[in-house]
Amino acid sequence: MTYRSETPLPEGILGVKADVTDEASLDAAFKEVEAAHGPVEVLVANAGITKDTLLLRMSEDDFTSVIDTNLTGAFRVIKRASKGMIRLRKGRVVLISSVSGLYGAPGQINYSASKAGMVGIARSLTRELGSRGITANVVAPGFINTDMTAELPEDTQKAYLASVPAGRFAEASEVANVVRWIASDEAAYISGAVIPVDGGLGMGH
Image (tube, rainbow, N blue to C red; front, side, top):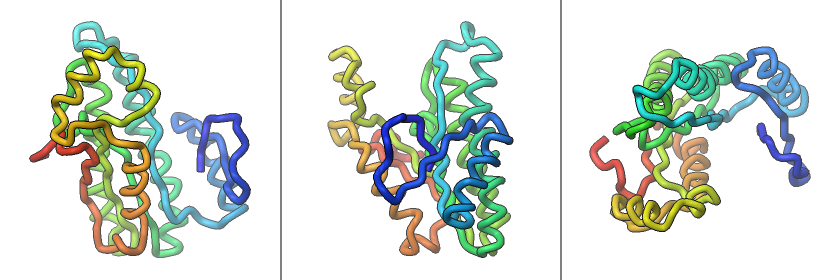
């Protein structure tokens, strides 16, 4: 797994650091993992940044840097991981998108575009590598109960909650449970799917 924290990982877990905007950094990380555990069989493309602002205030760098990290970064890691998956004739690719990638959000043209593009990647990858035993699916979380959402003003939290039929934010574990299942052998015949984990927020998309 890749991670940013300096906190030691539990025994048996290998954590490597990589920059998804730097192909050499990614290749070094993959080589370290492959040396220890062999080819990557499950890839979760989860790296992402935001640079939210309204269209007329958004600079070209605001747009391209988000696309480069979120969308092109996913392309880079998938391309690198697929080499080993093709040799194994087995692999699971899970792209973490967002409900904003399915229906858009004001002030997030860059982020929404990057997350919408993941659907195209997953479905094209399914058609290209599906015969090699490789699946590619998208998980699209809604509002998640995190430290960041907890720090939002109370009025903002209430407004967000009012838009969610379930009436609550998701727990991070609920997203992780879906990722774990879609990456398992139980989901071997599912590919090119978009699975929202949003309490009904994006129904119909």
